[in-house]
Image 1 (cartoon, rainbow, N blue to C red):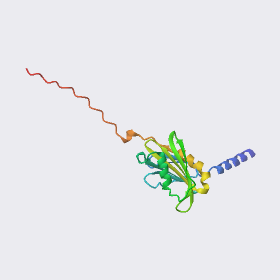
Image 2 (image 1 turned 90 degrees about the vertical axis):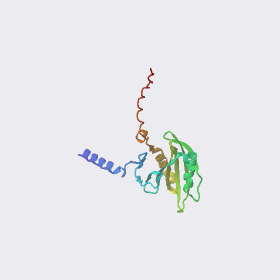
Image 3 (image 1 turned 180 degrees about the vertical axis):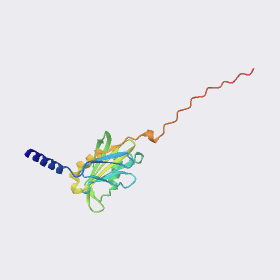
Image 4 (image 1 turned 45 degrees about the horizontal axis):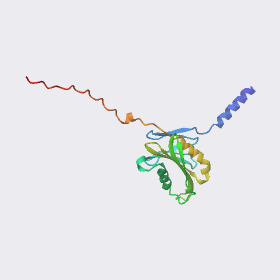
Length: 191
């Protein structure tokens, strides 16, 4: 009887120790991308035509995934510089840049801590991935005081992004089979 009571107590403790939220995967509305979110994170409505995915932990940390046409930028570093300039930070502690690889593709990562227009200091981790046909920006943001702690989470989110292969056969119909050539007609000689 004591053994069954102990087992019941252990089972109850195991149930209590599970997290309140399970990992979840969010997909872009067009199905071109998906992102696995850590426990406690949830997706939010993306804003803007270039934004494919947006998510938050509900405590001030968020991630946004955007796409940019390749012909609009010289290279991935130009996209990263554009993303940092778009933040309009009134000051910053210096932008740190590194060349990395995400999912076998070349990428650029920039991190910066600065003061926003709202006078709040925030930290940003911006990862630009060269996906071949476009540039993908994974921008993580959190309060400046949480930036050091949240940086590994934001790095992992950028690495967790999956770009789905596009099916060209569904987008472009296959050409119709060519009709067999007609036999050449020889003129009949006059007699």
